[in-house]
Image (cartoon, rainbow, N blue to C red; front, side):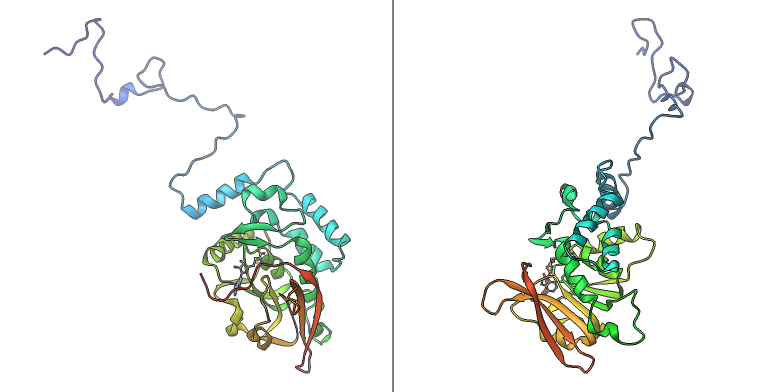
Length: 297
Ligand code: SAH
C-alpha cells in the first residue's frame, strides 16, 4: 500500500519529528514570536492554584482601579464625614482611615463601600454603617477604666470582646485600638468569610491585627479569655445576656443594641462596671441592628 500523495509532495508523518518542530519559516509548527520588550504583560492563568488563592486573586484584581476606591483619598473623605457627624476621637478616626472597607464587601457593592450605609454581607446579615460603628467604638474609648493608672492610652479598648463578627470589618477596626480582640460569630459561613477577609487585610497592614475569631454562640460570651475591658455586640436581643455582664472587667464598658422596654425598636445600651465592681446602665439613642440569636448554624 502506498503512502505517497497524488500531488507528488512527500507525505507528512505524524507525530512530527523534533527536527520539524522549529521556528524556521515554513516548518510544520511556527514558534510564537517573542513579545516586544514594551508589550503589556499577559495575566498568568493558574488553573492549578488552590481555591482560596483563586478567591484572593479575584478580589485583588476586581477592586476597581482608577476610581480611587483602593486609595486613601476616598477613605479620608469618609473620615471627614465621620468627624462632621461627631466622631472626634483621633484613634478612632485613624482606624477608619487605615482600614480598607472595600475589601470586606462583595465586588458588586464596592462602589458603595465608603458611603455611610449598611451593606449586605450574605445570609441575611449586614455590615453596619460607618457612623454607627464609629459612634459605638468612640463610646468604648471613654470607658471608666481609662482614668486608672498604668493604662495604655494607645490601646484604649484593652482586652475586647465582639459578638457578631459578620465580615470582620468591625473586628479589624477594633484591633487597631485594642490589646487583643476576640470576635464570635454563630454562622459558620460568615465566620469563614471573616477569616479569609482578615488574612487579606494582614497583607495590607504593616502591623498584624491581633484578632482571634471564634465560631460559637456569643450569647455566652467567651469565658476562657474573660474578663474584658470592652464588649461590643453587633446584634440586638431583648435583654443583655448575663454572661456579658459577668465577663466585664472593673473599669470596663459594654455597648449593645437591646429592645426598647416599651417595644418601640432598639436602643443602644451602655453598661459600665465601675472600679468598685458596681454596674451603671445608660442609653445612647435609637438604632437598628440584626437580631441576636442563640445557637450556631
Ligand atoms: N460586626 C459585623 C456586623 C455583622 S452583623 C461586621 O463588621 O460585619 C451581626 C452579626 O451578628 C451577624 O453576622 C450575626 O450572624 C451575628 N450574631 C447574631 N447572634 C449571634 C450570637 N448569638 N453569637 C454570635 N454572633 C451572632
